[in-house]
Length: 196
Ligand SMILES: [Zn+2]
Image (cartoon, rainbow, N blue to C red):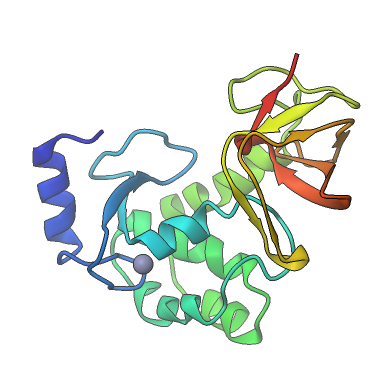
């Protein structure tokens, strides 16, 4: 948990609202990946909705709520690097034409762009596929979900604790495929725990 002083500094920078959508309810500080510690330079104040969207557990089409992210039309112009990086990444994931157009208009300093691209590089990088605890996952392993995942495309929630048997690895070391409720879905490895 970030210290009180840090939260105060971040909340003051954020004008006591979500730095992405400006809503003032249920604010929390998150670290912008690949950083995993909340600091003034790497932390971001987000509301519940944005936090949930950023943590979308299942990489299916339509998993990002396009209507909600219209807020980026304002926040993408922030002068704060953690906001810029997050907005730039999100705009790259939203398929609507306005998102691509806005992304192309943003002028980001070189070091901010390098940070924004860093996540993609890490995802595409070579190395073993790891679960949330860093255990190596192999083709055919069984895993357990460590949180409820809303499977938007399929219209059900995969419950925490659900076991997924015989997973398939993918080209992306952060994603595996598996069957939940008889439906083949893509799962983010950060929400999985290897079952023994
Ligand atoms: Zn928000």
